[in-house]
Image 1 (cartoon, rainbow, N blue to C red):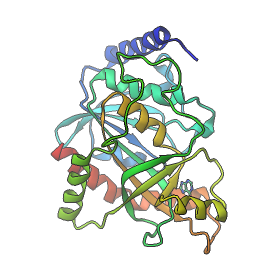
Image 2: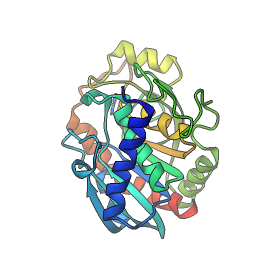
Image 3: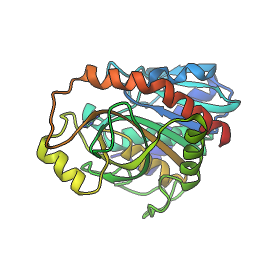
Length: 276
Ligand code: HPA
């Protein structure tokens, strides 16, 4: 675990490197999940920075994730987009997963939009649905805020009030309605993976009140909330995790379903950004 001073230095070096390449000052950060990489097509590109060039930045190991920061304008708003994210199952620490969020905060973001692929457990859902995340359950064996707290970043004991910012949830619902897009709303449970869940685990997670399950988002959202960044998050339901109706599910199934729904989520996110 790095000291507060070391983390501050790492963030400073990463931000310093990025600012040498990019002059644009982003207000909104966007994290693209599995199979959602082409969400960036709507962005008027200003520049890109490869993760592996940024000092102290983790490097993406998953093939379905690209690995660069994209800077540009979406609906006229300055954005930075993480094309490729870091998962705990890849072996990264929670501090490493939080690092890009802290860097984006220093670059100026005040809002964060997160997307992911998730297994649906609410029987009213079906693959291809988009779920607005209204709350989460942290089932990861840790938390990015464990360790010495940097008081200049955020509180030692942040409350989870309005974690998924209510104002943005209202915006997303209004945009979906205007676009004629059905929008599910639910609770996301995040856990390590990389296995998908057993029938018994899906039953348990559903019993705990979760509507969808995935392997990301929760650590990033906690780190962002600590920094007082307002959060909007969506899951694409790529497969169903119903304990009494189990099916085989491959990565191809997940990526295929995510890619198919992607154009709709792209429009939804663009509509939200326009109103942010
Ligand atoms: N479980 C966990 N993560 C997932 C799933 C799932 O069923 N589908 C996509 N990501």
